[in-house]
Length: 353
Image 1 (cartoon, rainbow, N blue to C red):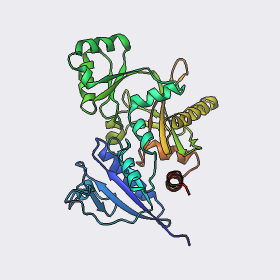
Image 2: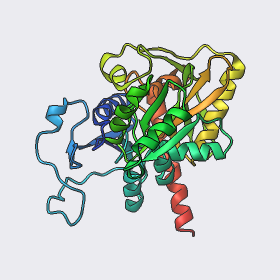
Image 3: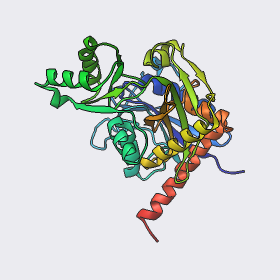
Image 4: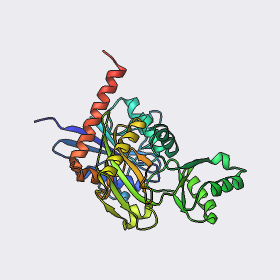
C-alpha cells in the first residue's frame, strides 16, 4: 500500500472574500480522498492570525474561537502546533492569498504548494496587469482604462469627463485587485459614476473602467503546468444584469449551462484562448479564465483569469472539469501531483547537481 500524503489546507484570510474561502475549503476537504491523503487544516482569521483547526466544516463562529498565533518568528505569539505536510493547499481568494503573498511564503519555506507561483499569482490578481500582458500576447482584450487613487486627487472633474467621453453606457467600474464581484458597479447613467468610483476605491488604490460587452458570459477551466489543457466552457446566465456577489454566494438565483451550448469552432477557440492566457502569465496548476461572447459580432473577448478559482459546490471550476470527464476528487489529486512535480523541478533548477 502506498503511503498517504499529508495535505494541509489553508483557508479564511484577510480579504473581503473570507467567507467564500470558508465554503471553498469545506468543499475541497469533503472531496479529498481520505484513503490517499491525511488532511490538516489551518484557519486564518480576518486579522491575519493563524490557528490549526480540525477541519473547515465547522461554523465560522467556532473557527474563530480559541487561541490564534502569528507565524512571524519575532512575534511572541508565534507558537503553533507543528504540522507535518507534504503539500500545502491554499484555498484563499483575493488579496493576501491569491496575489503571490502566501506563495512567496511557501517559496521561502521551500515547500510544495498547489497552484500558481509568485509571479503568476501577482499578475493574475491585478486585472490591469493581466489585461496588459494578455493584450501584448495577442489576446482580444475588453477595452479598459486604469485610474490610480493618488491621481484622482484634484482631478475629479477631468477624470469624470474622460470616462463619459471614453465609454458608452453601460460600462463597469471595478477594483483591479479583487474577486467574487466585490466592489464592482455596472454604470448605466452618468450620475452613478462618482458613487461607483468611491465604491471601487474602498477596496483598492487602483481601479478599472471596463467596456460593457453585450452578449454571453463564458468561463473555461485550465489545468496543468507546462502543458495545460482546457475544459469544456460553461455559461453564466445572471439573474440580475450581471453576476454580482449577492447572487453568487447569498441568493444563488443565477443559472448556469454546464457545458455551454456553443458551436464546436467557438468551443475550440475559447479553449485555445484560455490556454493562451494561462501561459501568458506563466501560470501553473489551475486557473479559471473568463470571456465574453459578443452578441452581434460573435467575437470572443478575454475578461480575466483567476488563479485560485472558487471551489464551492456550485463553483464553475470543478463543475466544468466534471462535465469534461474529471471528477472533483480526481481533480484535487491531479492538482496535488502537479504541485509536487512543480516543486521538484524548482529544486533541481535552484540546486543543480
